[in-house]
Image 1: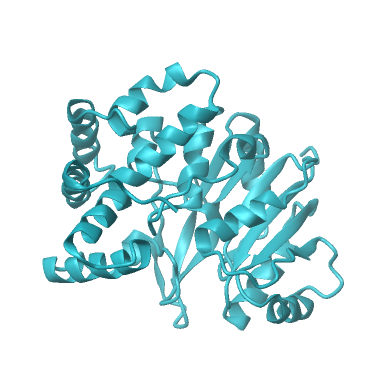
Image 2 (image 1 turned 120 degrees about the vertical axis):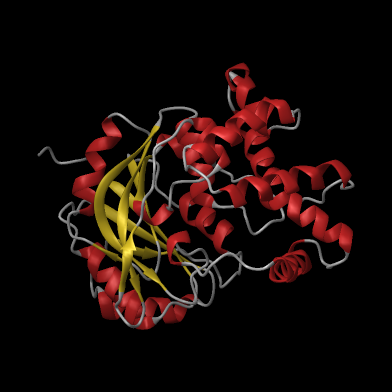
Length: 331
């Protein structure tokens, strides 16, 4: 196998479990492809992170910590901060969570696919912490750009991408919603340019626990009741909109589904020289979206099992919220 060009691994960190963090660092250090730097972006006081890193990989100069000054940005923008710190000479980027465990050959398995695709993902074994119970395996699926925009199939911690994707993706779109996801946006940028691919290879353990920002859907509890959904929406509204009144909940509901996809579509069209090639995307997801363009795609995605029926109903509810909501506030 040819020695790949040097790359970068970006890890966003926030108050990690010490045992899981040390184990993850050691699994990255043990990769069979050793030519990389690992950029760690702490979203809290970096001193404890530095101490844990010194314990896990003493003297390993491939690992570096971004000088954040302890500024708290949140999960989404902390990954952006880490990606902005990637050196320009690197040719590939991998994303890492703070509490998983990479199999030694993960990079060796995924990196060759970047010769054909702009972003590639593997699969993961789902492991409950601290019991160690195996919950199953992820079932990520390939799909068109329109399908990917509708439902993200890329978990950042399972993915590698070409450095050039960052040129389109940075800075990230801004939208006041917890639904804004770095891996969704990166996958959309890759799909719109050099393409995406998901392999069947299981390349790591994906640790599931109560502190996950986003866990795997297959390991989550059953769908909440209507009352619980309303409580969740009010909680998100207090964070995103500064209140939990009816209009704030309406705006939040819009942003979680339709608004986030509109923000990605608008940003992508603004940055692409050939924005006309995104007309199909614009008709379903952009600021000029039309329900008659979206519905066939949504119906087909439900029929093929790409999204559950409940998602389709929630998406349509979000669409309706966009028709009655006043001007949405952006960060």
